[in-house]
Amino acid sequence: MTATTKWLLPVESKLGRVYFDDTTLRDGEQTANVVFSSEEKIQIARTLDEIGIDQIEAGIPAMGGDEKELITEIAHMGLRASVLGWNRANVKDIQESLDCGVSAVAISLATSDIHINTKLRRSRPWVLDTIKECTAFAKAAGVYVSVNAEDASRTDFDFLVDFALAAKSEGANRLRFCDTIGVLDPLRTYEVIRRLREATDMEIEMHTHNDFGMAVANALAGFQGGATWANTTIGGLGERAGNAAFEELVMALKILEGMELSHIDTKRFIEFVTYVTKASSREVHPAKAIVGSNIFVHESGIHADGIIKNPETYELFPPELVGAVRALAVGKHSGSRTLEMKFETFGDPITELEARALLPFVRSRAIELKRSLSDDELIALRHMHICDASAQM
Image (cartoon, rainbow, N blue to C red; front, side, top):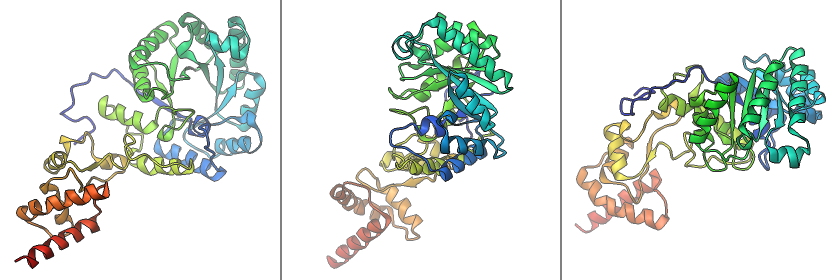
């Protein structure tokens, strides 16, 4: 089975090369109750680079202290990926990033009226003047510049264009479109990004939040609308409901859009998401898309039978592609064919008749335990059933 399976409806993808700017070390660590150690941050940065990320948003240099020291260390690790420092829209913050030796800076400034009026207590002209001043200062230092339109999804469209063009006039390399509180849906995302690209002819980066469970879908829609960058996190970490999960977006592009993305090592996804989640003092949910422990486990008799005959019946891509292993679970909804397959893997095959006879006991035990049976429990149950049957003979 290839990345684009024949069973999918044909997709005429117009997407070209896309780029990933990972913010696990910045927005990911802004998740409530998440703090990475210095060693963990270094390991995350190194693995992001190895796995194929184009740019690493390493943190906020203006925080000073350990944060600034660590960003400086990451910037001098000799990574293939570009290292970016995040900044508020003021020259002092940007200088802190430049001091770290990063190759890129993000300059973040709110653009929606609710933020301008109530948070910044400023005006639209002030926002335009400020982004021009900050962009000019950063470009004079020779670094790559991303200007971040905070709360872009609630910003008046014409003013958003003015903001983008003001930054572009001073040399900004791209515009980060921030769906800061996750209010968009894919259809609206596609339309606003399409119009924004047409109006500005700028590179656009998607920064999407998952408040309504659409962060990955909105990032994908942004790509379809003309964006070329996505700001993601490993495992979907981020404030509130989190950001677009890197591994989910990559696999959606590979499988649903048919993109090659050969520079990204997807086989390390489960290993890496597990590491980052553990460093966050969390656990990967079993049903987590792409990397959850249940994604390639089949219990239902109908599903298991299909998988046994042809994995493509219930899997769009092989588990090895993300570092997973396929498994059959034996529980309440299992069928006799699953029992046959399980005992074959134990090296102790049973007949179809034996499997059918054992199945009611398996289902009863699973109901009693309120879960699937372990291999040891299944073997013990078979032994008990055989003994009982022998005693009655």
